[in-house]
Amino acid sequence: ETGVTQSPTHLIKTRGQQVTLRCSSQSGHNTVSWYQQALGQGPQFIFQYYREEENGRGNFPPRFSGLQFPNYSSELNVNALELDDSALYLCASSLAGLAGETQYFGPGTRLLVL
Amino acid sequence: SQQGEEDPQALSIQEGENATMNCSYKTSINNLQWYRQNSGRGLVHLILIRSNEREKHSGRLRVTLDTSKKSSSLLITASRAADTASYFCATDAGGTSGSRLTFGEGTQLTVNP
Image 1 (tube, rainbow over the protein chains, first blue to last red):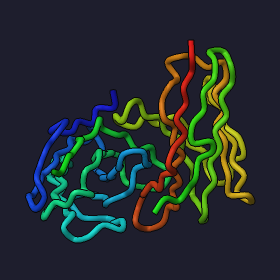
Image 2 (image 1 turned 90 degrees about the horizontal axis):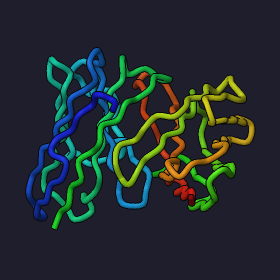
Image 3 (image 1 turned 180 degrees about the horizontal axis):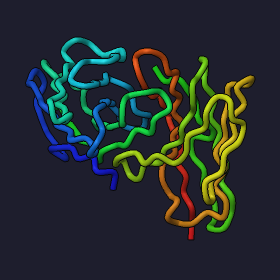
């Protein structure tokens, strides 16, 4: 157990809807990163939040947005859902977002878009 | 896009045998990490090797890094059925935007009892 929790564990939405996924970071960590993992592939970096500010973004459209709260928990929001958004969404927390730090992953939220 | 490629994509061995997985990547890195994932669940960090290191050990795990060939290998010795999982390498380029991991597509390891 890493101490990183995610909710919900599973979610079914229809195309065009919006979804919010939540992540609680490990105690003492101020950085949260989000990844998307399509079936049979490796995770892809969406973005990272450090002390409530976005600190780097991968190749994802603006309809993927996020927030980080003062307690360092985080949300991932996806608008106008598309079928290809079906995936496992993973969040990871780390101590200070620095290169070389271990990232601790939560169990993921599996999203299915119909 | 994926930074790295794992080889092989799938590996099936008997308990007690050693398992070797390889990873190649394309750009300069600050460090390379190996993760394990059971049945599409969360990733578990196994080991991190920095760009100025060539070999690292952790229990039954041995990782090598060859930055001139942009490749790494993960060796699991004396495998157990519980080692059955997907294994991913992830590179971290470092830089001012903090740590962002770029994963390969993984090796599915099956250890038969």
